[in-house]
Image 1: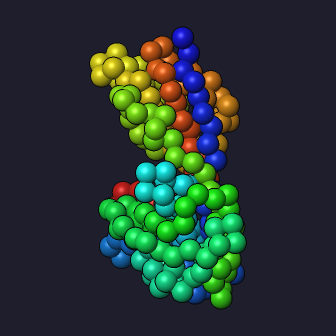
Image 2: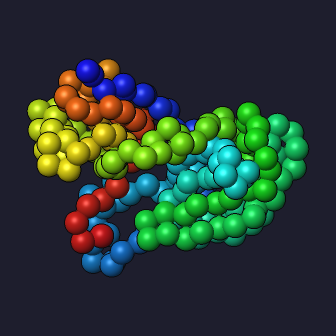
Length: 207
């Protein structure tokens, strides 16, 4: 039996690079803010993904740390299928932010601000599909396919892994289809979700 592989496009929003007021503040210690840091740092992504959560009946926005973007969101207007909605909760996490919108289900989220605007397709939550499964989540970029297969086989054999959610952060060494085909060959794995995270990978190390 081969794993069922699901390819998922993330519905995000990047701010226009032409507006200097819409640059995210840099994080970490200043001594690491060199040219390589600036080249890899994501200065303009406001939202990574957008989906409807049937448990809370809210639209969730998965975002990077807001930092100086917080006031921008407070000024923005949100509409779901043309219906005005408001922010119910902003949850700050260690490496990101989750924003919940009081809305109910819908197809398209529109965000408008005096400096920018955009439409996001509202996806669905896949949490129920993974209920009861032993799963793992990881982020990957250009890791060798052989290494990914060996890593998953270890978790299947030693920990009884049944499902994997892998965010592929813009790999260039192989295509999404090649990645999916490799994961599908891992015996014992039942479900695989590949999130195509087409965003800057970010600086690594002491930043």
